[in-house]
Image (cartoon, helix red, strand yellow):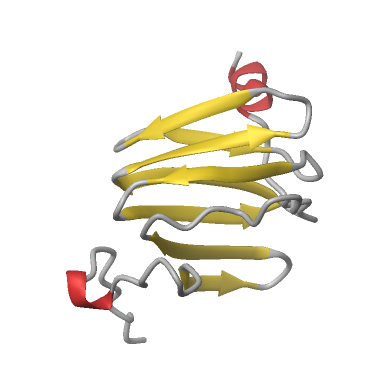
Length: 122
């Protein structure tokens, strides 16, 4: 079986302009509900009044740049290169800032929460 090579970092010429949507590339997907994707943002944010309300948990890591997310309950979290975040399904959130560029790696699946992983290991 041959593996497919994916490039996580893209040339600046491939960054979307601010007027274009973010780039979403599915790098892997599996049976059931699991998807691994690369997201390239270049200043894009979630449109005002819109919220992500996802059917699956999401774990993201910022590979390059910075981002800030705002939750519907008012909590806000900033992310920089190397930071990761677990977003439980149905927790409404918006992206309110991305640097130029911001490259994310995201895993969408029914995941164990970080607390569950620690509890299971004890």
